[in-house]
Length: 180
Image 1 (cartoon, one colour):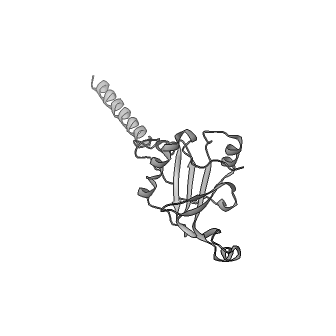
Image 2 (image 1 turned 180 degrees about the vertical axis):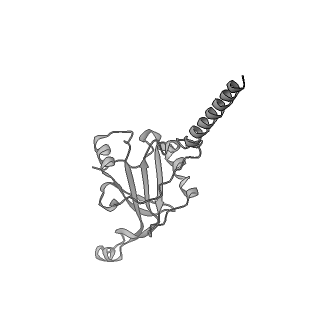
Image 3 (image 1 turned 90 degrees about the horizontal axis):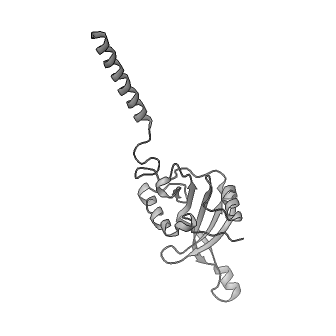
């Protein structure tokens, strides 16, 4: 009877140890799409300035910037083929500069009509990275923002991205449409 109790106790300890080990290896609450999941991308992708143009835009109001939107090969293929939602690995980039009048051009035209890209905007680089497992809580997209020196925005600033993008859920949370 004593050996049997020892075996049962040993078995219970082993089961609890294995369960503890499995639980410690599982993602923390939310890491596969819940509240605690990261929303930010912390590294600027290499070679992004060589990506293809998706579109251009001019934002008015407080931003008053001019921007180019670029995409990696995965993004461009999806845009051109009209495949939505975007596939995993899609990266869409926004470069922004202040929107300023061109004194030289306006002088040549004899009136103010020409505007050009000025100094980089405060949020010069913004990225969206499609990784549905890592960024499940934010529609499958991770967000990034960097200043002209490559310094990333803080996590609190990036948490404002997804609420804005939710308005365009039907376009896979992406504002920019392809300009052929």
